[in-house]
Amino acid sequence: MQLHDYQKIVTELAVELQRYLISRGAQWETAEDVVQDVFVKILEMELVLPPDKLRPYMYRVAWSTYLDQYRRSQRYRDLVQKYLRPEMTTAQPQPPIGDDLGPALAKLSTKERHLLVLRYDQQLPIAEVAQRLGIKASSVKMRLHRVHHKLEKILRSEQNE
Image 1 (cartoon, rainbow, N blue to C red):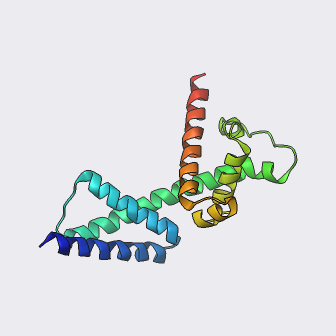
Image 2 (image 1 turned 135 degrees about the vertical axis):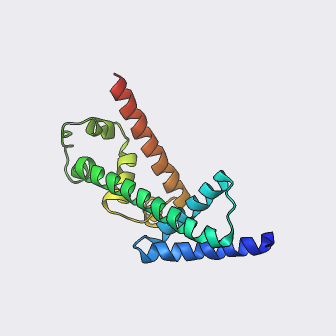
Image 3 (image 1 turned 30 degrees about the horizontal axis):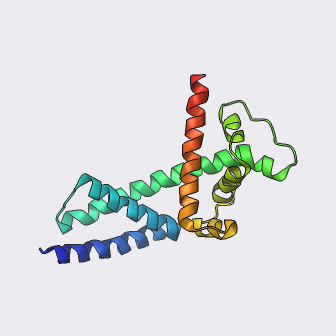
């Protein structure tokens, strides 16, 4: 099999995987991100499989990657609803409920908290968040990544105190 033929199969498989994930409940953007992540994982592993083994492998990796992303998103959604949503609807922030996450979220800027509410509480797609904030979708993804990283850093520093 020539490289051109293999590339054609992989390209068709990417479209097929995206449709599969959408049919299983993923949003279009999420499916697109997951398929991209799958290809990055395969490239990082320098994995070259024959076409008959590539398809089932990629389906497995795509589904598990989607589930991981879904669980992570659900966890953030729950945290935002528990700690940030009351703050956005009342004049006075409500005190945190007992663990370290409340104070960590309080250390975020208003813009960062608003970004989390739009994405996880209101469950808006990246494109819609970008439109509302007047920025590019890639900027929304980057800012979300930075906020997640900032929260992790805050939580680690509070644990070490």
